[in-house]
Image 1 (cartoon, rainbow, N blue to C red):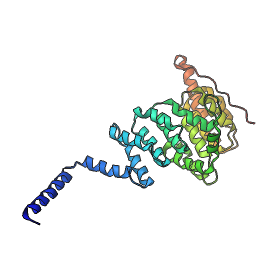
Image 2 (image 1 turned 120 degrees about the vertical axis):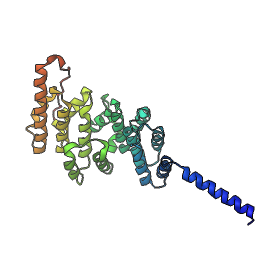
Image 3 (image 1 turned 90 degrees about the horizontal axis):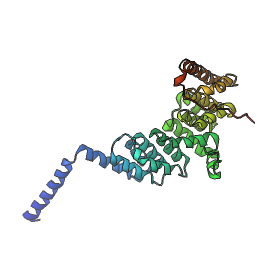
Length: 288
């Protein structure tokens, strides 16, 4: 190689090195993250997508999460839906609403949870359907949706995902995980009940009253009473009182907490009636 060629080669190497050194930490970080987002391993893509949720007010992160919603793997789509809620991406609400029709229930729950996080009450409709088996409009779930709820493998997976972050499990977490070995559906139903605690729609109050009175699994009944207490609607006090007679002690405890909280709220509103919002009284359905 001649001296001119060696000089040119040296200058090229120096130029490449200069660009590499000149790269900012942020650029390096995105290079690493993009490597995970495009990795052939679904597990690595999931991990990278979850990190996006920490990047609030980042249009680049939001675009990356929206792109991950199209991933062929449901775990990646679910992580993307959850990340959009974590990053407070309100502009992504239309895309999250579309994900409610996803074929995988874990993705649907993640999208619903993020909608609620973003202040869109339409996300509650998913949890209402899970708990009651019906849509809020009164129509029944489709055969495909009912099939999903009866799929023990899918529901077991949902139970673990629910406990990990789709909804808060509160003090029922330990009991829920203990039941996962032989009861696949109650943790998901319990999580749905707890989520409905903050739904302002009176239909959700009625659904919680019915769940507390008629659900076969004690974990679901306990969660329903927990949600009734958190909901803070004194019109549900009679439902909580009935729970004191439940055959399961854990349910009795949750009902007792609801009775005490709602009694206090009822007394407070009696002292200040002008500040008491009007609510429709929920009547639980009678057990068959």
